[in-house]
Each structure stands twice: as structure tokens, then as C-alpha cells.
Length: 434
Ligand code: NAP
Ligand code: HSE
Image (tube, rainbow, N blue to C red):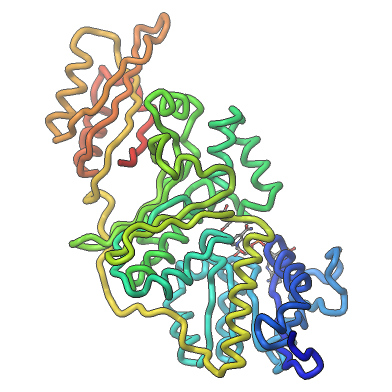
């Protein structure tokens, strides 16, 4: 046990006391007794930045609340700033000012890091400070630290998985409980998984930001959110989920980042994944990340990807590291190494299998016409089923799963389908994991 009377003190400030900020405050309080033994210092929250001093904040002492950022910035006792407000501004300004003032920064802000990670990590290093962001990717799962430290002896070639809790929760509820999309999204928001604007979750942007951050760290080359091809889950229907099951698949929103010979491939989109694959059983707000390295081979990280305490767990892990670095005078050395410039490939040049649900005329020669367009564009069919005829309307529904094909060749075939009178509607196009 540490001698608490002679224990050095490290004071921290939390900016934003919502889901994650509130969880972090409670976890620091819960751990207060043990933190001196774990870190060598007594760690306490000196100030909490809020926008509205009059809002009720159950469990947070009123006297530590402030709406004045400068009172935190100028407080020399505060050595660590924990940014949990989210968004670009004022988070970027506050983090930059904190680093320039020599304060260590911990953040869960993937929006900011996926766009300005390079600028902010350089600023941190220039000022002899650390910028830590374990909580920004996959909630409570330790993944940034393994990529930066434990696996640094590898040439990492692939990072992929389920990195958004909200969409995984929604797809699980739609698949397992037959819930409709809106009800499932409302539950995810109620549980604190969704972003302030859940569009970022359901359109795949949140997952895209996390993939940009992980790809940068894993491949030592900067990837920003606009480099990531992104599709969300809003077009997925109960029928797609049902048909996918009939073919032996689940539908998941997957993030994929690969370092291949001619560049980096990085994308987020829904995928059919075989029901027997470990990722198919990752349910609710759980996340899972696979990492492949040339030395370690395959590794998998699994846990809660969102929520108050899982995310606070990652935040506090970073805070503890910061306290240790402060006590050991070793700050400013863990901001990652981005010494390569690898081009990011266009989605059209990547390869994938596809699930295609298409409404066609029910006439002789239609199936042959569809197959010949696919064939002429180099798309080989793995499975094809005529699901049913549309009663009274003289139409039919075809469901096709292709072999692996260069994306742009498949898109060329879709463009031709759109101009064919025998094709009434392209209902769904979903990529298939192999
Ligand atoms: P949240 O519940 O919306 O909390 C954000 C808090 O920040 C709110 O209390 C808000 O105050 C406050 N805030 C916003 N702007 C502020 C400003 N200018 N000054 C002071 N306070 C300000 O969001 P959250 O879910 O905790 O997310 C926080 C961060 O963690 C985001 O970057 C998010 O992407 C990330 N993250 C969240 C999770 C999760 O599971 N929720 C997981 C991983 C990472 P008001 O009460 O006045 O609105
Ligand atoms: N909204 C995010 C999610 C929070 O659902 O995964 C965790 O980053």
C-alpha cells in the first residue's frame, strides 16, 4: 500500500460530462483508493468543464464545475486534460492549447483524430506531451495500445472487424428479435451507444473514422476519414437479413483495412458474413477487431465497443499511463510513428464478392440476359435463385451471389442493368465476406 500522506498528487480536468465523461468521473472516484498503488500518485478530478452550470449533474460536486476553459488551462496543478465533449470545435482548440501549455491530453474524440490526428500528435510531441486516445476506437477494447506497442514488431497487413456498437446493436435486434430499424436505433440511443447525431453511426461515418485511426497506427502511414469508402446500414431491409440467413450468412457492418502491394485499402460497408464466422456471433453493442501481422499471425480483440463504463475503462487506462509518464518524466514519447506515405486505393480497384437482389420482368430470356451482362463484365456467378414471382405484376425477383470481382467491373454491370427494360429495380447490393 502506498503512503497516501506522502503520495504526490496529479490533478486532472474533464471537459464534457455526458455519457463517457460521467462514467470517467465515477470510475476515477471508484478507483481513488487504489490509484496511488497503481500509479504512485493520488489522482483526483479538480475541475469539470460544462456548458451550462445550472443543469443537474447527479453525483458530480457542484464546486468542481466550471464553464470557463481558461480557468482549467491556466491552472498549473492540472496536469492531464481529458476531452470528452466530442466534435471538432472547441475540442481542437482546447486540446491544442492544453498541449501548448504542457498538459497531457486524453481523448475519446475519433471525429477530431480521424481528421486532425497528424497535426495534434505533432503538436503533442513538439511540446513534450502525450496525446492518448485508446477510447476513440472500439470503446473498452484495448486496440490502440496493442497496435502501437505489443504488435509493433510486426508488419501488419490487415485490421478488420465490427467497430460500431450502435449499428451492431441495431442489426442484432433486427436479425434476432425482428425489431424494426427505428425501434432498435431508439434503444441504442437510450443506452448511450449512439453519437449525439446518430447519422454518424448509421451511415458508417463513425466506423470510418475508427478505421482511419487504426489504419494510420497499424500501417504507420496517415489515413484520414475522407480516405475511407463508407456505406451505412440504412438501406438494409428485413428481407435482406432473411435472405442472407437462407444463404447461411448474417449481415454486419464491417470495417476493413488492408496493406497490400500497391497501397492501402480501407472501407466500411455492410457485408454478408458466413454464420459460422466468429464475427457473425458478435452481438449487440459488442465490437471485435482482427489484426493480422507477419510475425504474430492472426489475433482477435473482443469486448464492449460503446457505453458509459466500457469507454471510461479505456479513458482511465490512458490517464493512468499519463500519470506514470508524468512521474517518470517520460512524456512525449508515445505518440506513434507515421514514417511511411502509402497511397490509399480507390474502392473501384479493390476486389469483393457481391449479393445482388434484383426485380426483373418474368419473361423467357431474362435470366440469360442478366447472366450475360455479368459475364461480359467479368463477373462470375457463384449462386443464383429466383425467389418468387411478384403476384399479378408479372415480375420476378432474382438473388445472385457472385465470385470475387474487381469492384469497378461489378459497378459497370449495375450501370447496364439500370438501362435495361427487363430490369425493374435493383433492390439491394451488399458485399460478401470471404
Ligand atoms: P455526450 O453524452 O453527448 O456527452 C458530451 C458532453 O459534452 C455533454 O454533456 C455536453 O454538454 C458536453 N459538451 C459539449 N460541448 C461542450 C463544450 N463546448 N463545453 C463543455 N461541455 C461540452 O457524448 P458521449 O457519448 O459521452 O461522447 C463523448 C466523446 O466520446 C465523443 O467524442 C464520442 O465520440 C466519444 N465516444 C463515445 C462513446 C460512447 O459509447 N458514448 C464511446 C467511445 C467514444 P451538454 O450536456 O451541455 O450537451
Ligand atoms: N457511437 C459509437 C458506437 C460509440 O456506437 O460504436 C463508440 O465509439
